[in-house]
Image 1 (cartoon, rainbow, N blue to C red):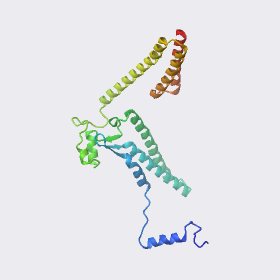
Image 2 (image 1 turned 90 degrees about the vertical axis):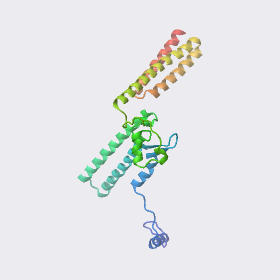
Image 3 (image 1 turned 90 degrees about the horizontal axis):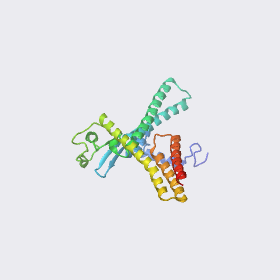
Image 4 (image 1 turned 120 degrees about the horizontal axis):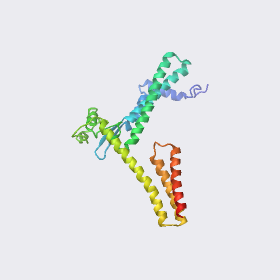
Length: 260
């Protein structure tokens, strides 16, 4: 064995003596944080968000809480894997525990997907996302106040529904009206875009009847049309997008052929 080196652990005798000296004098090294503490440390900045402008809002993001839940379940599942690796055995009790953990994990992933859909539909508006608890509404503000999340100046901030406080998510008739209005606006926007995407290039090619203008107009129009359709058509399959763009291109090409 070497004089200054422990072959087994690669720790020098001098370092080990120093560690023993610290232990004998009562000096202790800081304890390693648990996985739960690390998850909380990483998630807390996004879990409770304080927005200074315009009204010093407080927002509790339940989607972040769900992600912390996923991390905690991953830790528990890996612990079960560690037990299998060490024991070389899959006991019935462990099977039941793994079954429960995997079911919770799959449910957490499904919940995350649902939260992502609501977040996309909210378009950045906190009041449209049911997984955000904010000080914008009377009841939610009272909940945050009861949890001591509000500063004294934030407690005086008036909520949007202070005259007529509402329960979270909104009433069913109100939600139905909002959804119907959004659907009408979306259909009208598509119809307007479809009409303008045909009329604009046709008018341009009628006013300037030359080959270069026709080629450039058709090319640019098809590219813009394809980009907008791909951007707006969220629930449409790729094959439908290709068919739509091809039909639009065919209409412009036929128009160029008949007008030349």
